[in-house]
Image (cartoon, rainbow, N blue to C red):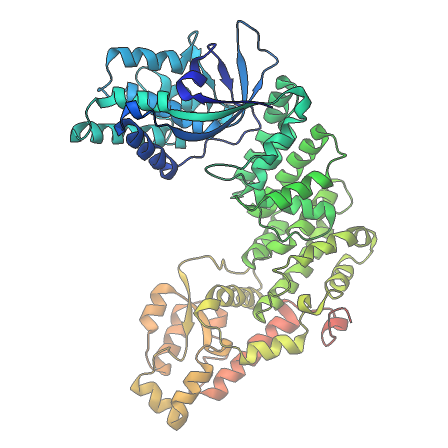
Length: 577
């Protein structure tokens, strides 16, 4: 490894080098927070006495000589240091465009920004257009991206600083302080040092740490030939990211972890996010070390399309999409590796849409029952991924629904499928407080769909609200109706499922804390919702008996007709002994 401490000005101009950011590098991600630190360091170094020869260490740059380089045309691949050097170039462009830049400095900055008429720092494809607009003599917006935002940050800071008159020497001292007194450790691997990837992984990241997706992209695309890097980046990685974005997937690292879990049939507890992703990354390398990178990238691209369909409920089948939306509303993310494998095998013709609907339906019942009972422990450890190991068993079964329930009932007790008695106990006695409102709204929407024999209401409809029949705040009329035990009844049953129903928001306000007889008239005359009429309209008064009777009615609809278990599971202990 050849190493050298270099001033920024020398690094950027000695032998007139060009710097190329390869496709496997992440996009520019520094925010105003990191740029503010850079700016303060620049002010500090420019204000210090030049005769003291003080310097500021600005981190490491890992460079590899490009295969296209020659003695007369020096070209480097920038393996590490992209964020820092890009920020320096943005800062210099802001100095150039500040209106405070003397002609001699403007000329020097131009000779750094450009090389033979082209940008000295060639950005990766994702940042190239936005960066090139900033370099123009009259810079234009890069559509509000990080590059443009940080360029404007430096413009604002330079303008404010220049107006304050607090530092003499103006922009020349500022820019030359960065170029002449900021230093970097420049590392150039030699052939005997081994693979660039190993060197890259051994370095400590400065600034914003790499996520799992960043690390995986680097490993897959750090190839000997630049042309092959570009081909795989444009034909596989970019389409993968576009597919995930189209499915509203917020984080590619989550997808990669689910992909790993699908392939390994096991759970990975390590977070895939910045600063904590390396254990998962090394496991990714171990899992796929024998797979050609081009083949792996193609498979990731295909899987990303399926993952996006699951995340956004955007499969070609509307019935499948409806059940996937329900699963997403039930926060069934732990089942994503299992579903990813299911839909991969569906794409291969091993499952039909009808098969998928039966399996998805069983999963919906499973997660809905667990959510109603407040069961999440065990899922948090993502043990559900191990079910993927039994997918071949499911594909060969004639009764897909029956086999799905058998698999769901054969897990650890913490992952059990609640039977009818457990669900009934929860629905009868549980208080559905504010923290459970989304779940209550979803559950009541499903019951309404069963009563109306139609697709259930959209639980995300903001105009649909949860109504407490016995109000959350007791009025004198309600105290009188409930009798001496009013406060006790209210404490125990106000948030019971039998006391909750659905109403459009305007009617909820209208009903308010009105006496029961007035509320009952609003329910009967102004809403078509059957769940807001059933076992309410025939009640002369609303008391403990009425609430418990309605809770039993709702529970019966759910257990017996809306989402019933197969008979053999209704009263069984549905977990592995």
